[in-house]
Each structure stands twice: as structure tokens, then as C-alpha cells.
Amino acid sequence: MPVAASHARTVAVRAHAPSGGSVVATAPVAPPAAYVDMPYPKRKSPLDDRPTLVKAMTAVTEQVLALPPVFSAAAADARSTMFERGAQIGSPWPDAVDEYKRQKDMTQWEAALRDVTKIPTEDLPTYFTLPFHAYEAGNIGWAPAFEADSAAVTVHAPIFDADAKEMKPEGDEQMRMSFLDAAKQLAKAMGSNVHDGSGAVDAVDVGCSTGRSAAMLRASLGRGAFVRGVDLSAHFLAVACSNQESGKGLFQKANVATGSSRIEFVHAAGESMPFDDESQDVVCVSLTFHELPGGVSLQIIEEAYRVLRPGGFIQIMEMDPSSAFFQRIASIPPAWAAFRATEPWLASYACLDVTEAIKVAGFADVRDATCTPRHRAWVGKK
Ligand SMILES: C[S@@+](CC[C@H](N)C(=O)[O-])C[C@H]1O[C@@H](n2cnc3c(N)ncnc32)[C@H](O)[C@@H]1O
Image 1: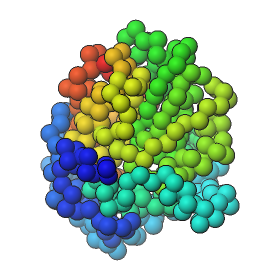
Image 2: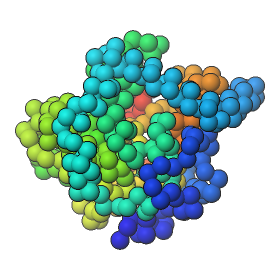
Image 3: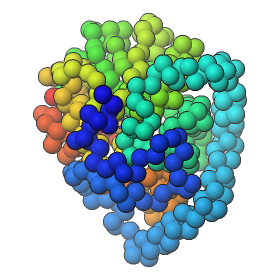
Image 4: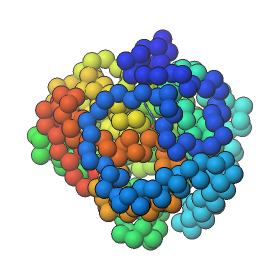
């Protein structure tokens, strides 16, 4: 059954669904009007506290940015800045793309895509088939898939610098280690032996993209862990499989740390996973909720509760809307408008109360900690 059909509960409105990869010509500055989000626990958003003038200027900037020629020019400019930054830290985007194209020709990539695809594009949820990150078809397509790792390394290069200026190529890996260490410590304080690397552990990485977070999760959980990576983008999963085959980057790290063992990549929605009740010990969700309507994030947490064994853990890393970095961006109209134009669900995420959502889903104990100057880790025990 297509995920969408099994998802009547999850996907409220399907009217906006495109039939192919290309969606709309410009990035939306607001979610599609036809989309009705589910209720979810809300916190006070940092966006609410902005002075009226800042709110008004942001609204105007968003309107201007929505004009196709303006958006195209801004997106091209942002892209060339990212290329420069990638080159600066020794991670040139075009080289990475060329490398993928050397590994397989496009006929082979298309075959890999067919192998991994379980949900036809027309059955993907409407909140997902929007432009993201200035890619017209969002996370669907080879360009975002081939560029995803370079983007992660580039975007996360300055996160440990308070002024977000000093670029460190190891920022992305450090962020992930910091999150996984924080999750381990929080779980340990709740009496966990799941994270100590001593036994067999079944784990899922929801929104695994091209595999960086799944590989690091595998390394963190130890030799006995079996990790499955779940994502709605078949293109990302095809690249994840290839990254695993070539054992590059963070996959090499996972193997070095734990002895090689394959991660299974599954084309599915995090809110409707093809796993049995009480079949998992850890469900990890990193950097995915800001790409989702808040109601879907809550459903993913509820789904995690279903698939976790009693005593199992959900662990989440996301941007922290209370952080100085997030507040600063929110207070600068052009910066916020540009951020939101490439992240259609950002405002919805900014008011998601993650702690409360974990409690509402039924988790008995919830703790959280800072893991980078702009990210937070949450852990819930079933
Ligand atoms: C920003 S990426 C995060 C990737 C990765 N977890 C990391 O830490 O780098 C978010 C990912 O979530 C995926 N995604 C979005 N909605 C999803 C859903 N409902 N179920 C599963 N994956 C989803 C996207 O395709 C994308 O690969």
C-alpha cells in the first residue's frame, strides 16, 4: 500500500500534490494554503517577541523575495556563497558531484533509484513535495542528493564559533558527536544500558538523508547495533547506499569504530514506519523536524513510541529557537526572510514544544541538553 494511503491519519490534505519532480517556480514564503496541520504542543516562538517594525519589515521582505526574478537572483547568490565556503574548507561542491558521476553513470543511478523506491512520487505527502533549500523539487532529485553532504559540511562549518564566522571542516562531525554524546549521557542518567555498546541494539534513524546521521549513530551505539535509515527521498537513499558501498566519509568512521556492519536504508515516512510494535531500542531524529509541519513532527514522535520496546529511547537533535543564533536571525528581516524562503516549515517548527510533544506521546521521562551553541538534544524514555 502506498504510504500516503496508509496515512490518511497523517497527511491531512493532498490537494497540492504534484505528479512529477518539479513543483513550483519559486520558494514559498508560507506553507501552501491548502495544507491543514494537525494540532501539536506549542511553545512561545521567538518570532512572537520581535518588535512590530521588525515583523512588518520581515513580511515585506518575504513578499519581495517571493517574486520569481528576485528569488532566482537571491538563490543564485546564496549558492555561489556556499560554493565559495565549501571550497574554502576543502569541500568543493562541484568536485563531490563529479565524483558521484564518476562512480556511476546516470543510467546506473536511475537503476539504483528504482531499487530503493517504495513510494511513487505522486503518493508522497504534500508537505514534503515543496521547494526546499532553493531546489525547485525540494529533496527529490539528483542535484540535492549529490550536493547534500557538501551542504551539510559547509553549513555546519561555523556552528561552534559564537560569531558564526570561523569555518571548520570538522564542524558537522563535531556537531553529531556532541549530540550523540549528549544523548548517551542523558540516557545513562535515566538508567540506560542501551547506549553502552555492550549488547544487541535495534535502532532507526528517521530522516537519514544520504546517511551521515545513520553512520554516526551506528558508530555511537557500538558493535552490536543494527541501524535502519528511513527517509522519504529515494534519491537521498540511493546516494546513502552508494556512500555505504564506497565506505567514504562518516561511513568509514562507523566501520572503524564498530567493525563493519551494513545499515539498511528504507524508503518510508517517519510517521508510518514499516516496523513492528516494540521492535526497536532507539529511534533517532536529527535535523528533520524543522523540515516538517509541527503536527507531523508530533506524529513521528508517536510513531517512535509505537515501534520502541519498553525502556527504549527517542533521541532528537534540532535547532534551538531559544539560542542566541536563532534569535539573531529572527531579528534581521532579510536574514529571516531568506532562511524561511528555503525552509517552508521553519515558522511551524519554531513554535513546536519538543519536550511537551515527547511527553504527550507517552514517554515516561524526558530530558534535554545543549549540544552546540545553536542545537539542542532531547531524549525520551519509553
Ligand atoms: C535536513 S535533512 C537531515 C538529515 C540527517 N538526519 C542529518 O542529520 O544530517 C532532513 C531529512 O528528512 C527527510 N524527511 C523529511 N520528511 C520526512 C518524513 N516525514 N519521513 C522521513 N524522512 C523525512 C528529508 O528527505 C531529509 O533527508
